[in-house]
Image (cartoon, rainbow, N blue to C red; front, side, top):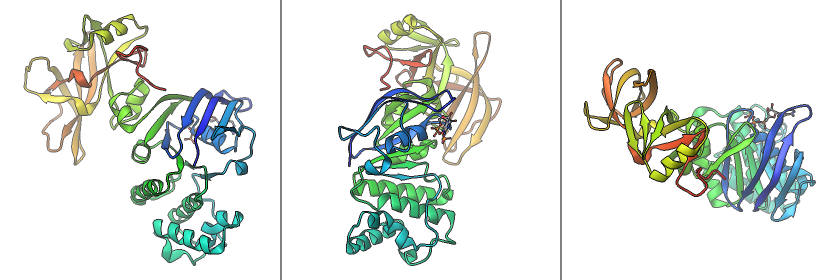
Length: 371
Ligand SMILES: Nc1ncnc2c1ncn2[C@@H]1O[C@H](COP(=O)(O)OP(=O)(O)OP(=O)(O)O)[C@@H](O)[C@H]1O
C-alpha cells in the first residue's frame, strides 16, 4: 500500500506536442482512483510515469515519500494490468496466476492458497488446471486481472482500460468483482478508462483529464452535481449537461426571456469575468411544468427517445435572434411527442454559471474547486 505523489510532472514525447501539461497530484494510500478522459488526453502516459515504464520529461514521482523518478518498474513494487491480456498460453491458469508470486519466492503453500482465492474471486476455480491456450479473450483478460491482484504486498495496482476486450455482459460483473477485491484488500488502485460508468462505479475519486491536463478531481457526486468546467459537465452524464447562453443582470441569469435568480455574489463574479457566460443545468434537473407556469421556459419538442427507464427529449426555445436546443430527461412513461409545446421549470438551486468554460462559484477563488 502506498501514497503516490506527482510533483510538477509533465511529459513530451520526442518530436510531439506536450502529452501531459504540468500537474501536481496526490494519490492517497488505499484510495480507488479513476483517470477518466477521451482518447489521447494523456491517461496512459500518466499511468506509465507512475509505474516507471516512462520517465517524465519534467518533475518527480514519490512513493511513500521516496523519490522513485529514476527507479525502474521492478523497484517500484507496482502491479500493472494492460488493455490486452498478457498471459503465457503454454502455462496453466494456475501457473499464470502463481507467476508473480513464484518470482518473489513466496512459499508454495501460500501460493496455492492465494491463487485459489483469486481463482474463486474471478470464478475461474474450475479452470485452474487447464492451459491458457484456447481460452476466450474474456477469460485471458481475467487471468491478467488475477495476476495484477494476486500479490498482497504491492504498493499499488494500475489498470489501463482492462475491461475493453471483455464482453459487455461480463463487464458489469467484473467491475463489481474489482470493487469487492479493492474493499477486501485496500491497496492504492488507479484505473484508467474513457468510460464514465466504469470510472464512477469503481472509484472513490475520479480525475477527469482533457488534452494533457487535469480538469477536475472529485467524488462521482462532485463531478455530477458541481462540474468545475463545462468539459466535465459535458463529458459526465448521459446526455451531458445543457449549457445555455445567457446574460447576467442584477442577481439573475437571463436565458432567452427567462430569468433564473442566482446567488448575488456569483452573479457579480460572472459579470466581472472574461469570456462567454453560459448557464449549466443537467437534463435530469429540468422539470415539466404546467402550461404558462410562472418562471417556466416555453419549448418545442424535437426528437424523443424512449429508453425504458426514462425518456430523453430534445427541445428548443427562443433565444434572442435564434433558437437554442436543450435536452431534458423525463420519468419513464412520460408522454411527449415531437412538435408539441413543453413548459420546463429550471430550478435555480440546480443551475451553475460558467464563464469562459470555468464554473463561477461564491467561493473566494471565484471558480469552483478543480484541484
Ligand atoms: N510513444 C509515443 N510517442 C509519441 N507520442 C505518443 C506516444 N504515446 C502517446 N503519444 C501521444 O501522447 C498523447 C497522449 O497519449 P496517451 O496514450 O497517454 O493518451 P490516452 O488518454 O491514454 O489515450 P487512449 O485512451 O487512446 O489510450 C497522444 O497525443 C498520443 O498520440
